[in-house]
Image (cartoon, rainbow, N blue to C red; front, top):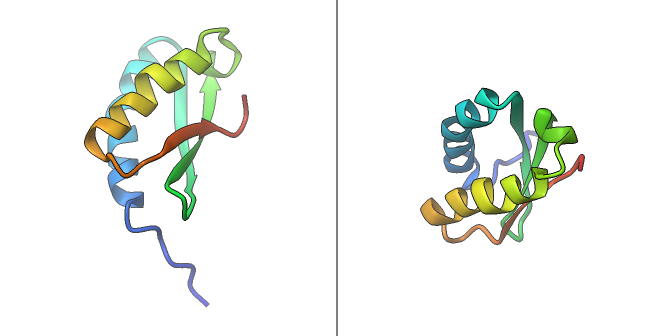
Length: 82
């Protein structure tokens, strides 16, 4: 049985792809993992973003803010590996 994608998944992935170069410039990276039925986006932070003490602020103040700006239905963005 094929797993159904969340209707917002492609939109979220597209925005993450636009954010990635900024994180990569600082030695980090981000990977989309999933989106819950409650519209919570799960990501993995990699590289410098994984070990940086400012990673949560980057996630909430940068990534989450940008995604919610374009997709207001998103409740939050959570890093599953921080």
